[in-house]
Length: 308
Image (cartoon, rainbow, N blue to C red; front, top):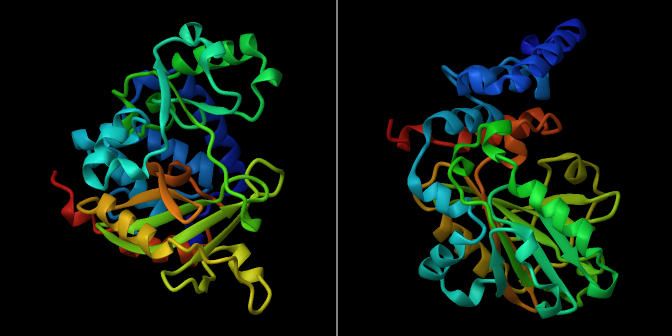
């Protein structure tokens, strides 16, 4: 990412206006044109799709050129369960309680007191129920049905989501009593490059105002890949998960043959559990990514393995 490519304030205002117009008529434009304008709008930089170098740039290139059927299965939050079972085994799956094509079909009386509802075809379609007696069923159904109508692909052009069947699944509510998980489960997000796991981002305090993200290597050394790592006091660390080695191995298996994949896992009572696979973190528009990190992670992605 070059400083001279940074857009001026006036240019950014003009791009924002253009993006608004294009969003209203997004089906009329090519994916490439749409992504170029959206990239400028989101990051403030012009994108180089002819010779992408940074992490964010290469993710946009992959949206346009890396299109294998298995990617659709891997982002489908229901279909991926069979895929994971075949790859690494059912013991790593969070149990499924039910699956529906319409929120009106959900019989809440048959669900446990605590559960999680997810839409299978998008990102963010999540309902975490800690106490069923406090859940507003009508509001929840309306919200889920609204999400079912949303075509996630149209907004960010993330091709794997284009043909995912829209459904709702219920999963068991998972919890851990360790200190690090006092504010909910810790997400461990593994950054993988064709089966090589470079680092893991531990996300703590999810669901509150100040979610914290820290990067570690396989030996659990804190990495200065983001502001949290840079600003952390000397000697800072987080408790090392007892199953961290196994999680690195799982992430390696699941990402083999893929230019980039972020494999999200949980470690609950020393047992790894699969969360999801993401191919475009922040949809490749992470303006908060350190410049050196954007370049570093970009160098790790080998686009030559993509069959054109």
